[in-house]
Length: 460
Image (cartoon, rainbow, N blue to C red; front, top):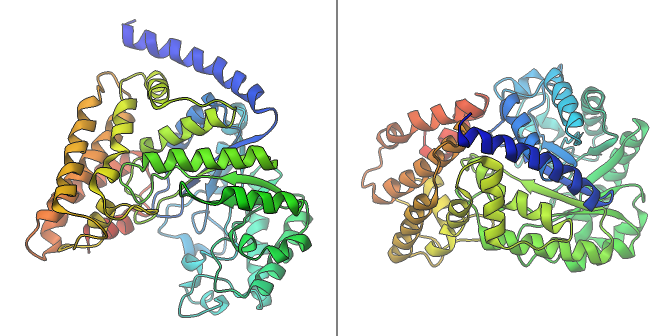
């Protein structure tokens, strides 16, 4: 046995012990992670198992797959036919695997807003609150409730968990009274099926007058992803109303290519501080895939590791987190991930829930710099990318770690090429990057969604 394989074996044993200690440290509170599997990218089954292994080693006890249209509902094939959805068999196998690792796989199906993948199709479009927008179910149409009831009857039997996240976020166009009434109808259906309902709390927190009338067995998910998000104010309101709640920060990896490090750390710190003060039942870390889901999963690891410590009352520094990532992956890459997470600040420009270089990649040839972006900022960002690359030593790393770093390199090369591009020929630009992007995507993810991601990032 060589030194590297011996090291990995020792690391696995150490992390098994750490997982048991972490579970004790949580004292029965939730430490969850939610992965977006609806915005293009649905990981292969073995990749999900690998994520579960890592989450378990860090003491996570809940895992959710955020679903809009990527479960293979029988009778709704039109909605998911080209999305490579999770099948009932996939979910049952993942549920069993999670249980062996001490993790509860919680069903998650958005049930109100973010229904565009459904409402764009004939036979469903008439259920839209606004036919022009086509994203929110009409709560006044009895068929809307019948639709979600049918989905629940297929989805919930695939899980052992008695929790159920019904989503219901970002339905701002719905009148608050109608929203609240529909939320309570959903709750009644979830309760009939023997489950405890979780729901995103953004709408009711904007209209706290409705909090007193909500059933007290609901679990409100208080989410926000900025480092100044008002978790303190919101959790105080939930505590006063007697609501059960989790606090939900984000990895801040989406819309960034390689993370927004300082924002992520501040976001998690504020979430944990408010949650501890006002009686949160735990934490759910959200990881989204906006804009084609280009970022590799490894970019989320600093946030995943950091919350695992903060939820247990610990306050590790950046060097400690980076060293832990190195031990976990058996190679030197933690410092590189932290350096990549600082690229967005070097660049300047847009930084709120997405970064300047992400918009450069996404928004077409001939892109004009956003707020505060300059040529000097771009140069500083690319210098930071090169610095980050220099910190990684991937000799002996697992293949997926090498792939994820290769994706980062490809994305930043594409950004640099787009800034320098003089023509408007999408096809020529796309030929430079599509083959490798496609290859790397298919090594870890199902084919469904790849076409949409390519259009998002490299044009038609």
